[in-house]
Image 1 (cartoon, helix red, strand yellow):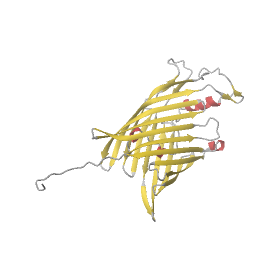
Image 2: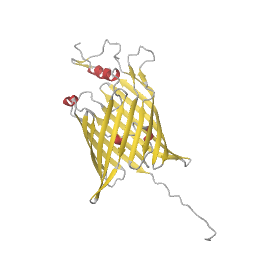
Image 3: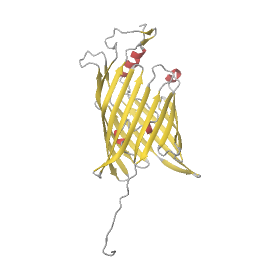
Image 4: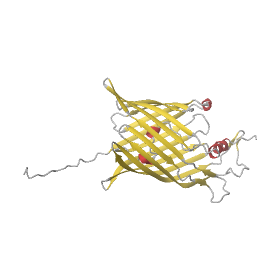
Length: 321
C-alpha cells in the first residue's frame, strides 16, 4: 500500500491494541487529583495547579496535554470531613482530541495516626477526530475505508472514576481507577458508525514517603515515590526521588521502566506563600529516542491555607466566682 496513513496508524495502535489511553506525566506526585478523586481535600488548603506537557518534541503529531486541578476540604455538620475538586484534562495526539472534565467528591475518615479517604469522580469524556489525513505523498480529502471517517467525528459520554487514599504527615498510598464504566465514543447511535472508540478502564497505584534530614543549618527532605499505571494489558512504572531543601527549592530524578529517565526541578517562590513552579525533562531510553528530542513538562501550583478560628472553651466552677 503506497499511501501510509500516519494518523490512522496512530489511531489503530491505540484502539485496536487497547494500549494505555490516559495521558502520561512525569510530575505525577503533583497531579494526584487527576487520577484519584479520594485525594480531594487531603491538604488543609485550597489548591489549584496547571500542568502542561509536550511529549516527544520534534515528532509530528506528538502528544500535547494540559491539566487543570483545583480542590479543597470542608466539613458537613461540623462532623464529617469532606473534600471536593475539579479536574479538566485536554489531550491531543495527531488528529485525535480528547477532553475529560470530572468532579471529585471524597470522604476522609481518621484511622489512628492516619486518614483514609474514599472518593468518586463523575464527569464527561469527549473525543473527536479530524479528517485532515496525511500520507507519504501529502494531504488528501478522503479514504475508501468505511472504518475511517472522512469528516470530523466525535461524541461525549458519561465517565466515572473511583479511588482510595491513605495518608499521614509522612506517608501516602493511593489506589484508584479511571473510566470505570468504559464509555464508548461513537458519532452515530447505530452500529454502522464510521468512528467508534472504546475507552478502557485504567488502574493506578501511588505511594510516597517524606523523610527529613538536618544538614548543617539547613534541612533536607527526601521524597521517594512510586507511580504505577495499568490498563490490565500493559503497565507503566515510575520510580522517583525528589529532594527538597529548606522548603524552598527541589530537584529529583525519575526512572520509567524500559522507557525513559527524567530530571525534575522547582522552587517554592519566596515572598509568595503557597506558590510553586516546576519543570521536568524526559529523555527516552527506548528506540523511540532516535526520533524525538525528549519531553518537556511545566507546573504552576498555588495553595491558600485555610485558617480556622480557634474555638474558645470556658470552664465554670463554684471554686472561682
